[in-house]
Length: 416
Image (cartoon, rainbow, N blue to C red):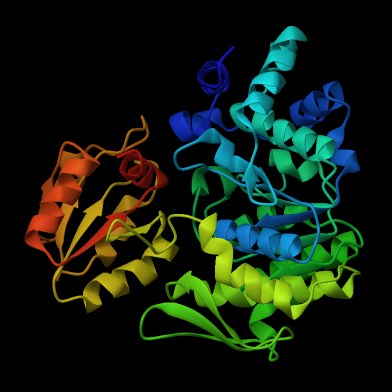
């Protein structure tokens, strides 16, 4: 079996959210536990940091893992989705899982006739990650929740720290139609005696979190309340830390939304240090300086194109403001049809030109349909048959190009 055959098998033979959306979502932990048991219950051998939230999970997870690795811990990192290669989801100290390890896991899965469990793509990849981390004898694994929290496959772990970045409306068909309902689902990762760090929370969401923390018997701190941490956005879009328990320093993170993420990360690192992890200032500074080597698609310039994976209304509050501030910019946009596209379109400023594309996923909204939505609001919008052609056209007509709206749009660009 080749690597391509192995990854095609787990995508095609097992429901994948990336392709089927909510139809692939299999809530509950019974299948994940059964699959983990078949591979020796690797999740019971791991010390973990569990990261949930609507936005910022990827940045938070990558930076926490980078800091722990810089502090000398052998650190696993499990995130989703990937942009161009399945192996991006699973790494140890920044090194992606070897292709032969993916092939070996799939071969053993198939030889044990485990298909009868009916596991989803995400359940299978989660146990692949946990088993790989156990085999690599990691000291700690940073595990990003796939969707929600309470019923997510990753929630079989008993972590050393639980982190929730923020709450906004996303995946409402699965998690609830109010921020309070969604907060309750994400608070499902809270465990007895395991401290919780929350990045941002409005009053009603904070009430949910405080109540859930009390009910399971754990402590909770809010990064937005921590007066010892100060971070700010520079004129060039980069984020600086003016004060923190780890000193002051610059970061490689870009974008206004990264200010809150930075506070969350620093608060989580301080909490880890208070629970016995030895994390010095040098490790933290190194992590914030170098995390861009593994974290992609977050306000990142790639071949002169500003790329961002923000795909819901909360993320687009920041993106729309940036587009509105530019005098000569073309935005190449594509979205999944199951997102709240209308709310995002309503935020778009009139200043830019827009080129709409359909990303390479069955969930994508057709380019001409998206362009019609923008045109109905009086925006200058056309459609393009591919991301590459759209970017080429955008470069011809504007001095700046933005590309985003979906992970899959960036994936198409990365493949060029």
